[in-house]
Length: 181
Length: 224
Image 1 (cartoon, rainbow over the protein chains, first blue to last red):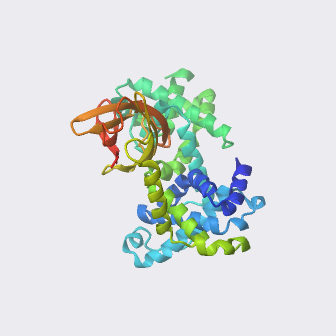
Image 2 (image 1 turned 90 degrees about the vertical axis):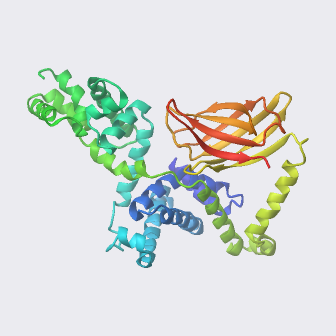
Image 3 (image 1 turned 30 degrees about the vertical axis):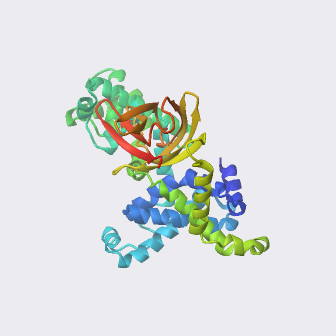
């Protein structure tokens, strides 16, 4: 998909119908929102930043160079700058200032590479069966024990354990297919 | 816990830290002396770290559906204000009509085109989310001999394999179902449904999320 994404960026500027921009937004807005929300902790401000990212992407589409990185990397870099700007503005916005009291620099939070990897792992989870996804979510993200999951799902503990094993094996295979080892 | 197969079934729970302490100790001891199980363990041992990177995306609520249009509006506005191409300048006075005014013209045109009395075969509605919901969407409706065909699109629907969404055409004290659908993993759906309800027999459309345990309105549209 990378080359078609690069073509999309070329079209974004010329396409007056807005469809290229809409396609770009639909492909990347979810993950950029996850990234900015994680960095800023405020839904409303994270949405403002996402809007700013796509506006800047439109404005600077002519400067995108596929030789220097993927569209995804480029958008995350724009987002990183927009997040830093939002944090600077946050010095007069108490809710954000509370969330990140001392940080205004780019070193806070996960790196762009870590964030992009995180999104790919989240996408890999979406490709698992609902049963496999559920058991991973309950155990890892909600911190439930096997017994608690068994109770929650109305299943024998042994079934939940074996399902967890197969779920992680499936996740590993999907990640390998995506080139993540 | 002597066989490799036995501990293998526990490895998933082990790496996710979801075993009881005594069970985890037993697995740890087994791994120290069983190379086959140790290899299996190594193949999934790094997954919790990767999963932790995914957490911000897993826990993020869905984006407000309206943001997509806000982004497109912002870009259209900026394009109208200052597209630095020569050909654009020729048209700037016309393009620079305020977006709100343009939207009003489009809205009037739509009303004229779609709302031409009850005799029009095609009409469309926009859904608004019910309090607490993030759903949004719209529907194009076409009158047929036997009722109405709905081409419905939606986004921001909480995805859950146990839930179905039902579309109801309603008037006061009267309801006709247009059927059920499931959204994709991103909470989006584009479906074509039919109902026996005819135009004029209903004045609103409601989308309800149903599970075995609950039923909850997610968005509604008014035909008026």
